[in-house]
Image 1 (tube, helix red, strand yellow):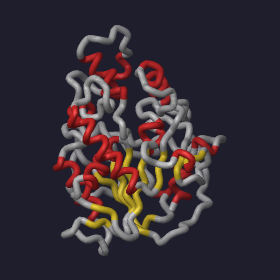
Image 2 (cartoon, rainbow, N blue to C red):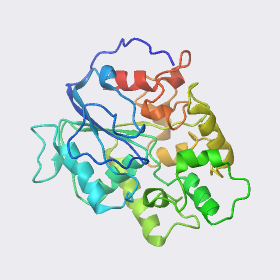
Image 3 (cartoon, helix red, strand yellow):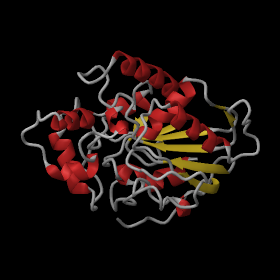
Length: 294
């Protein structure tokens, strides 16, 4: 978990950056925060690793009681992203000269905000998407099966990651596309979100191996990877590579932290900067990747 000293300098025009966490946080803060302290452990602190950010802010939103299809949650994502740059147009909802970073379900919320015209990315805006479950997560289906008493060998340790029954609204909303719990409306929303995602993402991190950095999260993520009936073994424990990369050019993804589209060997907690960088492999340096990205 040692941090490598930064050797990257900013390659583009420095801009303000805003980080949006994913599922798992009940806190709601109207003001953008200077640290991710209130994000319930769902976002790492990147203040010292953002050479291209003139300022680093964290949006803290209740991502438990709302679906990613919630119009109000989408609007809050837009409102927060529009606050940072003087050049952004609040009336028209055009985000300019701002770096927007989303993790996990945050990517779905942002995609749907764009798909439904609540805001758009304009000149100088960059969207960095981390571990976006653009087809949902089989972890939600597995959890729903458990809540329905359909799973006999459920590991109760997973409740620390997934929550308690009944399933939170947010987790229920990311059941897997075209699977048994997905409604026609949800499947249609996924398609709309995927189109907006593919058309707007500037850089992405999508892991294909849950065997990540040695940390407190490692055991539980490997357990999730093993027990959840994922559609593909290429996943970060909770989100599959194929869902995270849908609509993007897979040939652009590489194993080096220097690749704009990064295909690391990291678990879902690693990809939100909670565990720093690994010592040896270029495929286990998420912090370095962000430092060198812009």
